Amino acid sequence: MGERVLDQVVAERWVERWDRQQERYIADREERFRVIGDVVEHVCAATGTPVVVDLGCGPGSLSTRLRARLPAARIVGVDQDPFLLGLARAGRAPIEYVRAELGSPGWVDVLGVGTGWDAAVSTTALHWLSPERLADVYRDLAAAIRPGGVLVNGDHLHDEQPAVRELAEVVRHRRAERAGVVENEEWSAWWDAVRADPDLGRVFTDRELRPESGGHGNGLSVGSHVDALRRAGFGEVGVVWQSGDDHVVVAVR
Image (cartoon, rainbow, N blue to C red; front, side, top):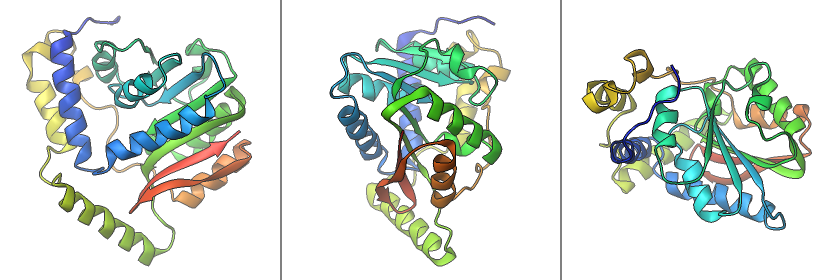
């Protein structure tokens, strides 16, 4: 099916509900967004019209926040989920949204922005990729991002040391309790509610109102990501922010 038009008020209501649902798992989600924005804003400071690509953009939560901080940038969000892209496209912000599968043949070309990107960003999305597919994506990004440009990835990434991993999870859970988000809607419940909404059912098929991914992701550690990024061709890679097992990893081309 082609692109559908979703009522903006309906879309905004569901994106707001998505954001609250996500905070159940990422109590400091807004701070993570701000940190990613800090990095991108700094890297793009000398560029008149920077190009920023949001990988696995979902309903556009990160893209929208970056647009507010970088009004002159060309921001392109890419995702394979037609419903989440529908929510994103119904927003007010002037952002380009493209449906493509990360790592599939020619996915970079589908975006229509060429190469020489200033930044690629992602948040709680790349962990859904298999290690092999992720390595392909990292190589594609190393070829697409300009020298001095960055990949900025915010995600739950565990430590390879079991005791440290356990303590980082404890810190995350305690932070969620203090933030008052442990009773927020669960991910699966959000999707159940989506399928029950007649306003959405008039625009999307039942299949489109089901998540593209499930489970708990690839389980890669911080070290595994760092190694894969360096093998892909990034010069410097490191963690610039962490709260428990929630990290923002930066890779400089």
